[in-house]
Image (cartoon, rainbow, N blue to C red; front, side):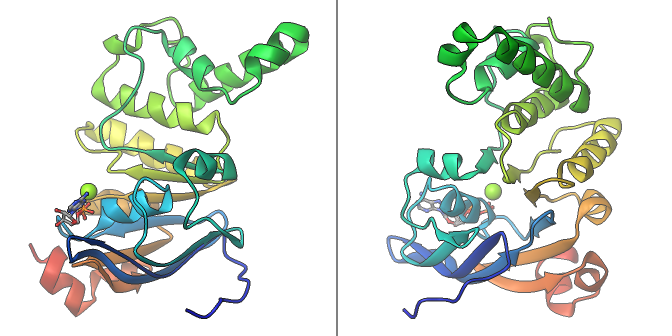
Length: 250
Ligand code: ADP
Ligand code: MG
């Protein structure tokens, strides 16, 4: 494969494929994500959406193609290195520490060196404390800091997990169906949260709720059978015949 030239994109995915026993779950996908963009990925079940995120975060190894993040090749990096490069990933089911408080969940998610420097410099502790409170406020949990996380509603748990990623200050945040199971009110708040988040980072969201997609997306990528069926602003995607046929019409 020829080496690609540098791009101005935050994330450049080119000719990306992965096969599972000969079945191409992601098949020759090319997509570019801008800085501060909120990209939504839609498509029928089994289209390869989750697998695409698995490839970007290094959970699954690509069979072919390349993924570059800020012009750095990350395709073959192990998962923990990709996190360090600045990519955070939220899975479908929230993975929080149910028996720790909201505050403690955020605290343990604060990036490395906390133990060492926290013990040496008191002001670092203050900085961390301020950061935890600021994040908690932004995820609508400012009044629940001492509450055991297991007692939160399903939607609040989703927010907490987003907060646990935000505290690591990723430049790209990826969320797999974040509003599934949320109430109407919680969906509205999540839309507001995601718009705020992408003021200083990019976000990729997989979502099925079209009303929600319309509210948040800059651009939408439609996957179908592992391939990009269409890409563009929601206004165009909505009236795309191919998209209506395989997905929106159902
Ligand atoms: P989506 O998230 O769009 O619903 P997925 O990315 O989860 O779709 O799955 C795409 C296809 O790849 C599905 O047919 C799924 O069964 C298959 N697949 C995903 N992961 C694996 C795996 N680790 N091994 C075998 N097949 C897989
Ligand atoms: Mg999925």
